[in-house]
Length: 199
Ligand SMILES: CC(C)(COP(=O)(O)OP(=O)(O)OC[C@H]1O[C@@H](n2cnc3c(N)ncnc32)[C@H](O)[C@@H]1OP(=O)(O)O)[C@@H](O)C(=O)NCCC(=O)NCCS
Figure 1 (cartoon, protein in one colour):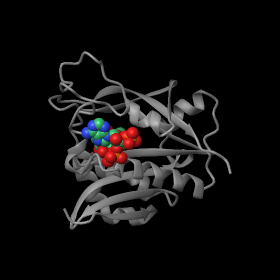
Figure 2: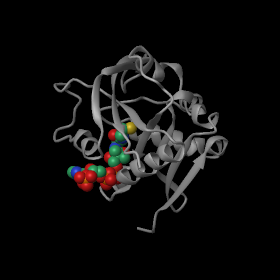
Figure 3: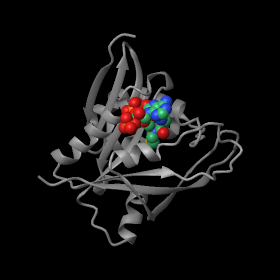
Figure 4: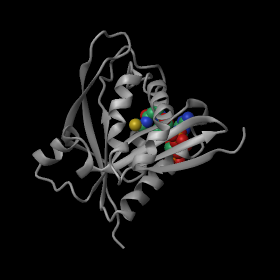
């Protein structure tokens, strides 16, 4: 396999890669536990939050002309209200928190450290902006769900190892249509947090 190339884009420059980002999200999130039946129309609207935020960062991984991975981040203070709401409800200050969007990588490129790199680059983004905490949210699925593939290993151990802790009190819901559904349904999402060390 040829060497992979990492591209880092900020704010408005992310608009040049919206199609690649959207296609990747739709493909990777179609799998368990997301089961997201995505559309380009929804994606284009959703991804505007990164384009319109001058402090956002999107990291794309390229294998030649193919975008095979991506990861995004923006300050929580610049994120949509529904992402902020659980923090506001808990009386937390949004200002020091960097909000991690998605990390998506095609299956054949997994297991060689790119996921760890995504965390390192987004944590560096937080430090550059003088932010002190990183947060992301993850979907909660029923363990007994028949759609869960046999042998599926989730990301929890990986996230713990990166220093993140699940904060059950910080919860929200996001709506999307599962594969096979005709309408969106609410999915419970729980936030994970990490305090960055201060120098
Ligand atoms: C999450 C994701 C980006 C991780 O990417 P990755 O490049 O495979 O991750 P890495 O190679 O950096 O490995 C991360 C950890 O998982 C472990 N791991 C990776 N592949 C593994 C495998 N097949 N079996 C067991 N462990 C594995 C690695 O050993 C590493 O653990 P370590 O920190 O103890 O070394 C990728 O799996 C993915 O796109 N998943 C689907 C989408 C998703 O769940 N995104 C996260 C929420 S938005």
